[in-house]
Length: 269
Image 1: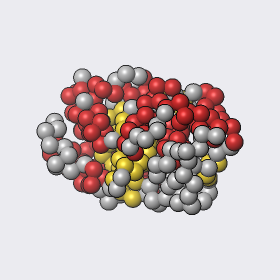
Image 2: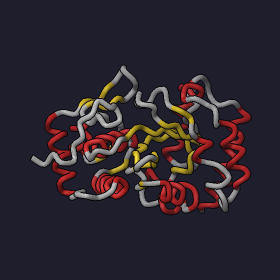
Image 3: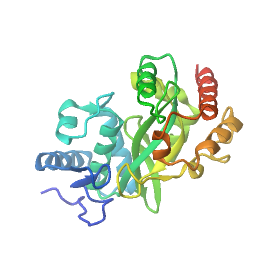
Image 4: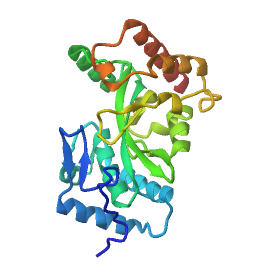
């Protein structure tokens, strides 16, 4: 039995058998076949005596290389594994499962980022959002789910959909080198986040807005349109997820998002 990497704990952030998805309303349970698959994957990755960060990098690279990032929202592990891909939620679930199975605490991240208008997906999402009066999506911005994993005493980003593991590639790819995300259809319209929430143990509900701790003048030093970015972040730094769903964004806020999207994607080419 190859169980040396398994850490059984009552801590929900290490529980790989039951992953809290949307609070107590939905818990994703790992069946025996998925568990056996995960054990086999980790054995093949030969994590051995690697440190926490190296383990997370290996897992992220495996998921990015073997699972497509598309717009099929799949939440059953058996289906994600069979279809070899899914949307950002699917990637996040797979990441949390494998990270926890490897003994690394992991929890959900949720963001709102700029999108490039007049692309098929932004038009589709924008029309849907306008019909639903749903402010978390529009022609100019969209939401995205990924993972926080604990590296020692620090929580770091893990996003196998966009091939990001750790803060260095997070800042580099998401803000300073947009072209690094242009390898696939889904990545081409994904801009940088201007709102970031961190899970508190209840999955994708009850999350904490930590935008100001991640996007600030020091981390954005040298970024084009830095002043505009800070103004945009300040607009939303105290917003809860529920605030986006109450109504379509106020016009003043939407104008800021629209303006920054135009400037950002013009910069990126």
